[in-house]
Image (cartoon, rainbow, N blue to C red; front, side, top):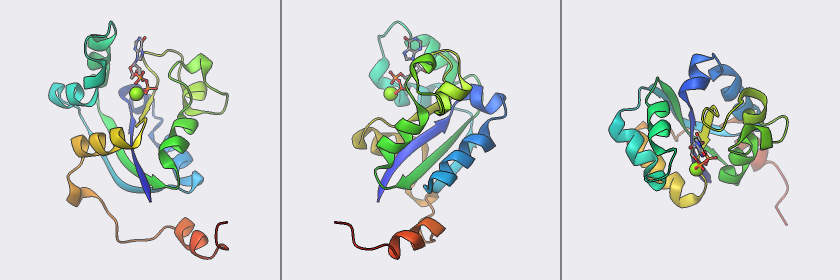
Length: 155
Ligand code: IDP
Ligand code: MG
């Protein structure tokens, strides 16, 4: 099953949106296999956003992501990387589709409430930054997994 790294960014945590965002992820049927609140260190933030080093917004991005606790998650599901990006909406909240997390909760691209890996390689890299392998809880089933098991074969 596919996995992605998701983080509720400091603005989302400070605004009391943790429950709302997790509810959306659970209602979609995705499985949260790891979850923790942490205060990102400078080292973690720089690793996470290494691809943006040198860009004009890099320093403000680092300041933002280290400005308070985040809620980090590993989320599992069918095509979850693409699915979470779809639920999050575009980077610029006013370009995001109404109903997405960024459209509904954010006003600026600087403070856009949620992070989600953009591809499989990023997901692997980001999960490893925030979680040790033993922090992932894998030996349990969601209701959704029972549903999939009882669905007809995919064609
Ligand atoms: P993404 O989060 O939708 O993948 P990226 O382009 O990877 O978007 O940028 C990472 C994060 O950096 C964004 O979510 C946003 O917080 C911040 N960011 C991106 N572009 C800008 C910008 O032009 N100005 C300020 N912050 C930006
Ligand atoms: Mg990105």
